[in-house]
Every structure is written in C-alpha cells, then in structure tokens.
Length: 512
Ligand SMILES: Cc1cc2nc3c(=O)[nH]c(=O)nc-3n(C[C@H](O)[C@H](O)[C@H](O)COP(=O)(O)OP(=O)(O)OC[C@H]3O[C@@H](n4cnc5c(N)ncnc54)[C@H](O)[C@@H]3O)c2cc1C
Image (cartoon, rainbow, N blue to C red; front, side, top):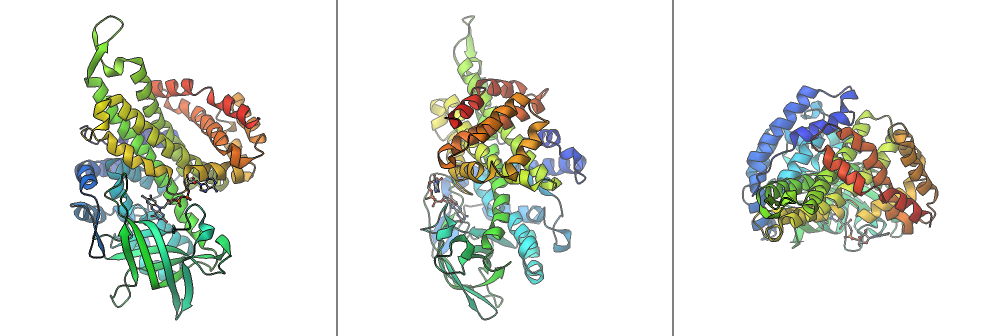
C-alpha cells in the first residue's frame, strides 16, 4: 500500500497562488509550520488507523457507541496539541487563527482518515455558530469546552421525513422552565454518540412554529448530552446504520425524549443559524473531495509507475503509466485535485477577506459540487488504473472510492447545490458578483459563453446541471493558469483541453 503523504507543498502553493498572501492575516512561516506539524501528526497517528478502523467499524453495544480501537487515543492527542480550537478566539482558549489554517488541517485530516476527521470536523462550525448567534453565557460555557476538545459536537437536522427538504422537520421544541424541551426523532446523525467524550453538544433544528410553518417555524437549539448536575439528558442513540463506507464513523438514529435545551439566536431563525454552520461544513466537505482525489491519484501514480504491462511504440516493455489511456486517467485525477483545491481555496480566501460575501455565497456550493463529484470521479479513475488490484482491499483505493461517495450526498446533495446556483444565485447579486470577480481573470470569450448560458436560464429545475457544468468549466479555465510552472501543469493543461467542449455545449443546451 502507498503510505499516506500529506500534500503540504501543493496546499501551500495553491493558497499562495489563489491570493492568500494578499490577506493581512497571512503569515507564510506560521502557515508552513502548521502544515508541516499537522502533516507529521496525520502521517504518523491518523493515517495508520484508517484501514483498521474501516475493518473494525464503529459498534453499538448496550445503548452506547463504541469507536474503533485507537481512535480515542488519537483524538486525545489531537485535542492536547490544540487542534480542536485552531480557529476559536483566544479569549475562549483557542488559537485565534483564521480559516486558512483550518483549510490546511481539514484537508490533511480528511486525506489521512476521513471517518476520524468527522469526529472533530464540526467543532469549528459549532464554535462559529455560538460566536455569531449564542448568548454571552452560552459562549462562555461552551466555546472553551469545544475549543479544548472536552466536548464534541453534532449537527442534528435530518429526520425520516425530512432530508433535503428541511421544511418537513417534525421534531418539536416547547418552552419549559427557563429553557426548552425537545422531543422527536433524528436520523443519520454523525457521531450522535461515541466513547471518546461523554460531553456532546447537539445542535438541533426543531420546530417551534405551527406544524405547517415550513422552514420559518424552525429554531436552533443547543441540546447537551449531559445536565449541569452530571445526569444524562434524555437523548439516546437507538441504532447505528450499516453503510458502504466511513465504517469508522457512527451514523446514528437518535431519540430526543423531552430533552432539555437552550435556544440559540432568535426563535424562528434556526435555518439562518444552521446555515452558518453548514456553509462551514460545505467547505469541509469540498476539502474531503479534494483529499480523496489527491489520495486516489497518489495511489494510482505510484502503482502505475511500477507495474509493467504491454509494450511501447518501440516494442519495449513499459510501465502502465506510459500508455496514453492511463496517462489521461492519471492526469484527470491530478487535475481534479489541483483545480478543486483552487476553487475551494478561492472561496475560503474571499470568505476571510470579507469584502465580497455575495461571491462567497456563489462559490461555496460550486466548490462543494465540483469537489465532491471530483473526489468520486478520481477514486473511480484510480481504481481503474490499478485494474483488478484496484478492486481488492490491498491498495486501499477501494476504501477511497467507498468513503468519497458520501460527499455527494451529505451537506446538501449535488442536485440541491446545482439548483441553488441555477435557481437562486445565477440571476441575483451573487451571480453578478461572480461575473465581476472573474471578468479581469478569464478570457473574455469564455466569460461571454457563461453569460450567454446564464441569460438562457429559464427553467432552473431542468437546466441546473447544465448551468453548473458551465460554471465549473469557466472556473477551471480561470484557475488553470495559476499552475503554470507547477509540476501538475501538464495534467491541468490536458484536462482543460479535454474538457474544452463542455462550456459551449452547456451554453447550447441551456439555450435549447
Ligand atoms: C454517512 C452519513 C452521514 C450523515 N451525517 C449527517 C449529520 O451529521 N447530520 C444530519 O443532519 N444529517 C446527516 N446525514 C444526512 C444527509 O445530510 C442526508 O442524507 C442528505 O441531506 C439527503 O437527504 P435524504 O437522504 O433524505 O435524501 P432526499 O432528500 O430524499 O434526496 C434523495 C435524492 O433526491 C434529490 N432531491 C431531493 N429533493 C430534490 C429537489 N427538490 N429537487 C431535485 N432533486 C431533489 C437529492 O439530490 C437526492 O439525490 C448523513 C447522511 C449519511 C449517509
């Protein structure tokens, strides 16, 4: 098996190339140190648990979730080294760093061990929600615990009748004493329980309005697994799901049975609060896709450079990577990883810059869409490059393939993001912000093709995927020149060349 090697140089290269150096907060030496320190930790302590955790899986025993062997010790080390509070304010015990540091560590963690990354992956988003919407008392009580890794966090939205359509949520919250009481059932909640920490903050979306109040009747709650007196709040895992990948990450069905909770922010503004967490999480999922694409390429490149099959034009034996079809597949996987990272880094840098929120609103779903599809595609290409060995356990590309697949479903399935872009964003100020941002950075002829497609958007549900394909085509062409002189430039050029038809084709399809 190819050992996991964190792509530190590529990550730092892309951050710099996408404009991080122009931010006041950017400190090149510090970011390099963070990347190198976290890479060493991930390579030595997180990646080696990826395969055994996948094989052992999380288990449900006597009403509690048991994590795979070694996970608790690794999370303890992660917390002790201060990674849980990387972006938490210093006054609450965090490191006070910006989202770029988190971008570096999130990608490396996901590449080393996606299932384990889910254990702590929601902490920065939960901290952000409390900073933005929590009361002073909630912030003081919870942020230090989250930043120190004493308390883990979940995000509890999905229900049997409410997946993409959160307006169907039925879990109820009613006033009770000084706080609220939550009753209902949630499904698919990642890390709804584990045996790493007893303290969990469940961020729950529950209905406070009338049954037919849709998303306007939803409010956001902090529901703790534990009460102030140390007893357990009535929040129970009732089962964990069996699934194709992410075996080390428990996906929990949960019952809230009159659980004590506190309102976060205003009543009826739950979706706004939850979205500030989900946008964070969507960038995290985009980085999971980038991590899988990078890993799949690394395994396939190492394997195909070693194995000899067939002969070259001169009749001599050649390694697999010398055959044009394999070279194309390797180049596509590499380009997806490099361009996906560049799209995501552009979104994160603009988020940190803070000057163009409409652009960030547009770029975030596109990054999630491109990278989650790209991670799956690259894993599939990687498997094909290895032939029969790709399908076996031995080289682990099959685990990448299985683990990558969920990224196209959770945090908003790909279709939902395509609909958001085509239906709500394209012809709004966010669409203008996107066009204006790239106007100075792309070939005017390419931007004109995108604008023609945008003008032809008359039926978003039918046209959403074509418009997303057009948008991703434009972004890839805009970002490709950043890789001039980089070792991946030939792969990017080959990918751009082979995808050249996609923009005009999508424009023509949109125009009917
Ligand atoms: C491993 C795993 C971990 C998860 N972790 C969490 C978690 O921690 N917290 C949490 O709350 N949830 C979690 N989820 C749930 C996840 O977010 C949902 O599965 C996802 O939102 C999709 O909802 P659904 O499964 O009900 O699918 P549905 O909403 O039923 O969608 C099914 C298909 O129809 C499409 N579709 C749906 N509506 C439309 C529409 N209006 N127009 C066009 N197409 C549409 C979707 O794109 C999808 O392809 C997790 C799920 C899994 C499998």
